[in-house]
Amino acid sequence: MRYALGLLLVGLGSLGWETPGLAHGVHIQHRVISGIEIQARYDSGEPMQAAQVSIYAPGNPSDPWLKGTTDAEGRFRFTPDANQPGNWEVKVRQAGHGDIVSIPVAAMDGPMAGEPATVPSASLMKQPGELSPVKHWVTIAAVVWGFIGTALFFSRGKR
Amino acid sequence: MRLTQILVGLLGLTALAGLSACGTGQTTAVDSGTESTTNSATGNQASKGTLVIRANGEDFVRQGFTSKDGWAITFDHVYVSLADITAAQTDPPFNPEAGGKLDPKAQVVLPDPVVVDLAAGDATAEPILVAETDAPAGRFNALSWQMPLAKEGASAGYSLWLQGTATKDGQKLPFTIKVAEALAFTCGDFVGDDRKGILEAGGRADLESTFHFDHLFGDGEAPADDDINTGSLGFGPLAALAKNGEVNVNSADLKAGLSPAEHDTFIKILPSLGHVGEGHCEEVKLTS
Image 1 (cartoon, rainbow over the protein chains, first blue to last red):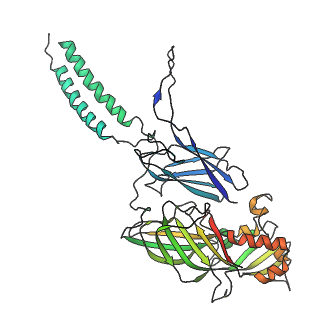
Image 2: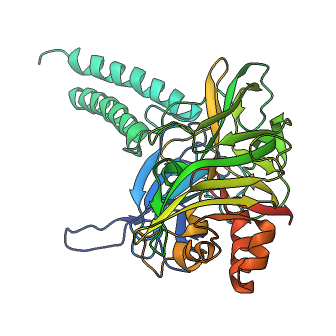
Image 3: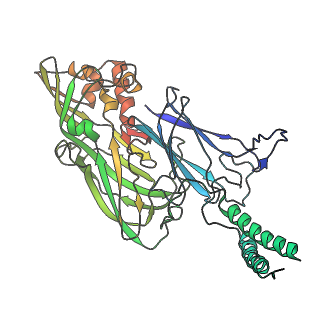
């Protein structure tokens, strides 16, 4: 009754929006993301269909960061938050059988090449309220500039 | 001038709104939770907590079950001999499927041998307490133990002692199966409803040695072609060894009485009995 979890990477590539040049008002945007795909099978090779999946982020091994179920092929995909580097754990269970696998995810600015289970630095899953230092100071400047502009607007004389 | 002032004001508001959106636009709907207060990677905190080691025969032992060949089995005693129980913090996490040596960053070793009865208590009993010990705070994600031959007690001379009653078609057959093979198991993280082994300073955490006896007898509730049944011995071959209305056999009797194929199955099953919840272990059989 033992099974192994096979790991595959999907969608490797840089992160960024690309907007194809459409002509008539319909826009389909896509972006290439990176993520992790696991596949759970029993030793017999039979896929673990509709098995429970729990994803644990490195900083919190107690509470699942994400829950889901495998598809008909025993696959499950997710995009870890690259702002949380470390060992991401994937637990798969079904009818009294289960296993857990640890997947190392590199730091956001760390080297990524050659690591089969490493996710490129950019992430779709950014935590609320997190700003880089550059964005932090630009935001402050924009706030000040907004107040100045607003003040100038309302201080104009009546003509 | 008025147009200039309007443009300046709108630009400022637009910049503010735009940057605000930029800061939250990629936020996931999934909460990542809180930071752990312990670091499983190092295990070097001076702070300690209490680590509780338990052994569990699961409901198969506490409540009984039906074997793959239709024998209703209940247990009076399931004695397991345990020694050198080692709870470890590993990083990268130890993977028993991959094999290799367990390389702990921190560990707690309980060297003294102990025999516990997995059938103690009623049908709803908690897993059996084996030991409590102070341990460094951190993430205990590996557990190993040995099963030597017990030196004393009811199961002296054996690593595993199964005693109970099997019933089928009105035939009631008391059994005692005494295993003289010494075993050892090296396991990774616990897999179950809850997570275990996460020890915070001043707190308590538990780990569990789990034994799956359905691997030996099969499970009548599972399909006949399920791995749990195709790979198990069942109870029928053991029932065939009954004398005077009772099965009372040890490892030597099994070797002499079972067919070579049945005995080979029995021997191969023994190292797969140990688990951590549903998580598997590196199966090591010491001696036979």
